[in-house]
Length: 266
Image: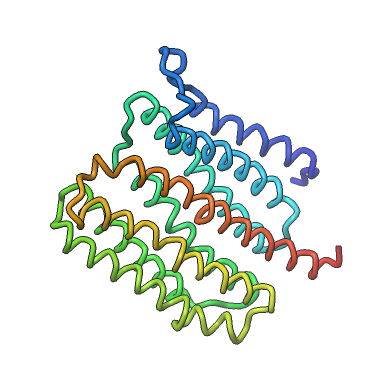
């Protein structure tokens, strides 16, 4: 059944408002409010609003994308939507208690990080046929990185052993996007725009994601009390997500927009 762009946009707006409605509650009703000198709390509010705005932007922009590029932009919107929901909860818990349980971060990451890694596969698939092995290798590295990282932070595994195993997963990902099959497909078959996006995305995965193992080391491997490190770690993690989630999605949007315009002549 044909639906006009206006009808699609209206339906998408209703879906977005419904999904985000449950996260709109705050502790202010209980008398707990954000203090003006709470930099971590302010960063939670900032990233929460930025993620919501990004979600609406990506979903609305996906409607004008051509072919498989729409999937890539929708995936970016899903990343920011999931992260926004978790940040609303983490924000309220921080304002009320001054702490953020580790499990909140990992519930977010176990969903959003695989989606981010899938973007490498999706943008290549939009312009050429890509073997399924590329997707699964990226997923294996991602899941290993997250599972072992959580095991270490949650005390389920020795923190040093967990860190090493998690780092091996990250290194496996970096190898795939710099020297593996994904990188070779990008170099040989992708358009200049896709190649540029691919290179920028892998730089984010390398340098932007480096903040997380650094945080792990500072919190668990150099003798610091994780609780004492909570303020700086949360502030750094929150600001890093501006680049690692929103910035990453904007790269996808930019290349999708260029490729769509090139294919449609608009």
